[in-house]
Image 1 (cartoon, rainbow, N blue to C red):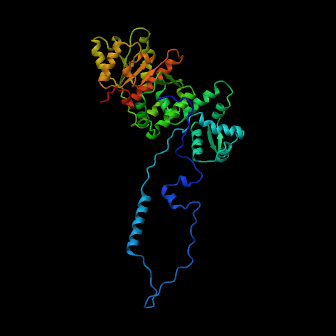
Image 2 (cartoon, rainbow, N blue to C red):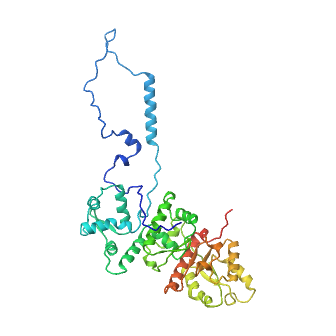
Amino acid sequence: MTLPNQRIEQVIEESSHADAPTLAAMPDETVADSPSATEKVPAAKKASAKPRATSNGRAATRTPSTKKTAAKKTAGKKTSSARKTPTPNTPPPKYPRHDVRRALRIPQAILDQNAGHPSTPNETAAFLGVGYSGEFGVEISSAKKYGFLESQGGKLAVTDRAKQALRPRSDTDEENALREAVFNAPEISDVYAHYRGEYLPDERFLKNALVEQFGIPANKVSEFLDIFSASLQAVGLIIKDNDRIKIVDVGREDAVRVSSKSATTRRTPPREVLETGDTCFVMQPFSGHHGGYYEMLFKPAIEKSGLRPVRADENIFGSGKIMDQVWRGIRAARVLVAELTTRNPNVFYELGLAHALGKPVVLVSSGLDETPFDLHHIRVIYYDINDPFWGTKLIDKIAENIRSAIDNPEEAIFTVED
């Protein structure tokens, strides 16, 4: 997937609002039955023609031929059948059909030309020098989904969020308002919450996830990716690293309208109830400062997810062959966490065992160069120790990904395509 460098030019395909149906919006059969604007309908005859007289003096009744009657019945059946054939309707997407900056066009017009007072949709369209149409209705819908507009008695009112973005009073007002808009946009916020702090997977896997997990219509995936990328780029939530795209975690869990908990369960069965003995096995280096990550990061994150943390060292398992303990710990675990930083051979060995057993593993790394190339297509949580809030962010993200691995294990299981 390539990152768009300019704002998306939106192509509107569906109308979310219209004052009255037009010929262009009517079904085909309705248009066919409607006279054109220039077509004149002939006036009905005031009186019928006189009947012909027969030899016996009686008026002859003119009856249509059998062939013509049959033809008319057949044509009528075909027309009726054609009109009854259901037309498949694809539900309109829930996400805004414009990127976050484009969605400010209408609020800007109301502020500039009506002093910010509520305006009717038709008045607003006139401010922009256009007529009200289906496309304009979709643009209004986008602005509402970002929280830039709201309805007040049949009029459109500019929200405080839009005013903060368009008329900022500090250096951070605009960016904060736009980020809040992204965090509250349907489906865009879900995908952001799910992948924040991670590199996006390869385009093929990402598209599959958008359709199967987030419910994005298959024929709208490309449009969604364009809008998603443009919106996140506009607010500095995307980093392009060579050919990979990383979603920035701003560490504001309360700002995300829909957490990854709801996002990951949207199209899945209800969340499973965890048993008391369910464990999460941690695979990590024990030497150096990374050895302290268990108590500082992994243990609280695992407990937050509802599992019991376990790791493979003598203090946890007691006496006995360490490899036997590792094997039993991996087999018994509901989910595993692997710290890939330092490329520790013991961690890689244990990770190989977990993958061979088909266990879901949450991968954690301090950088892309610490992650083996063979694992780049799997979800990996990346952290930056230079971020002053990196510890809190990492704990929250690990807890979320553990729950996600329980609900959607296919995301965290290493698979090989035939």
